[in-house]
Length: 104
Image: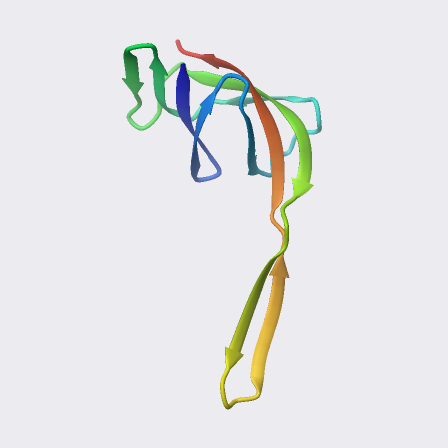
């Protein structure tokens, strides 16, 4: 059984027991997270597609840790202008473990 869910405008294919990194959630380590934006649910030969989401379907997960991703450097250089800038960014992420996929 697997599902495709939407979190923070991004889509993830998940199964029970998967560990994924998502955008920062306002939860502490060890807390439960309930995700109800399920786009697709596949169980054996049965496929259920949402329009856009499946009513009654939800995913239960647990927060493992909150952390920052590695730094991404953005650099812009303008030739012949003696102008340039450099900027770094570290995205805040949450690592979660999928506990249960539940349909209606």
